[in-house]
Length: 476
Image (cartoon, rainbow, N blue to C red):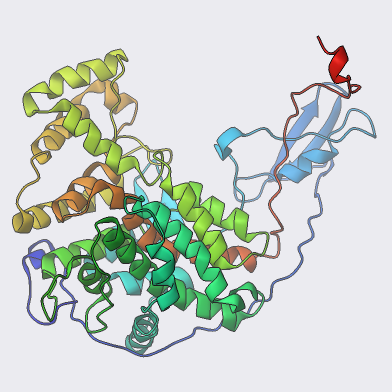
């Protein structure tokens, strides 16, 4: 980041951090990947404290199912059968609304209370006191780094920011108007061919190398994708700048000898990256774990996670907010829009509500503060007044309050990105850059979990049962 001085960001306790190169660290990964075995623990009825007693009314048989951490094991239901050759009882949970598919020590969310913790640290404290690379270290390795560890970690990332020249040639093959996210995820997947050692996932040193490479090269890929989409030459990394400052340099540098990022904008981007670094078992993270369970290399798995993020219901949500605000058009039309939403007349309130949060998204509170600092530099986004009025009315309206529809992280992030000069096509790419830390940490945790094996959900078959083939000339 730009060196020296305090910025306007300090007025809200969002710090501008000094730049500088640092050294390498490779925290040890001491676990071994093992082939898991899962033994059902269902037993006949006994007197147990933490159990769920199930009575199968089909047979009259009772079962005690152990309860651990507020859950029962789905495999424990398999012994509930009508006949000995019965497959056993399964659970049916479309979209995994009430299924825990792993144990994780990375991110904790209490949606009712609006709490988000990375490795136990509140997101508000990290956004105020930390920077992105320190937060990434925390997410990946479980503890905040010492000063020397952070210096070493930062330098290791810095040394890996350059891309192979053939990757540039690969990206140049895309159509001039190709979507940046399509370029991004394709290039991430192609990196597995440049680093064949990545397939050695049982080798902890190899995994660490890929962690460094991915964390360092993803912003470079994102910046190249953006420059390609606007027909401008690629900018090489500047290792004198911070993580966010270098990214801005690769995006926006023109003919100047040395790009100097605005410290407020660089800090705002750091905070946005912190807020998006991980978010428990969402769609893209689950994809990362599912693909990774086949023991494929992390580049291929991360390409799949990026593809999941590409979808409008995930990484494209903040773009939908901007479309909604433009559709409203002016502050005076907000009441009319709210009325249509409540009447179900086609309009949808985007950026409100969340699958997990049933109160105010803690990330949205931080972003709202950052927005004021950004707009002081860039000028106010003309859509901001509409957003503020929409939020004010919605938070006072019983219709939305009783349904626990509060602003989420997407409500203001799109306004900030747009004010900083990013086109809406870059929004999912900007999401993928910080989330790489979470994806890689979740992938690593999955590999070292002795209970995990290749993901293979069951289904409820609804098609026809076995039938004979009918010759073509006899089909009606």
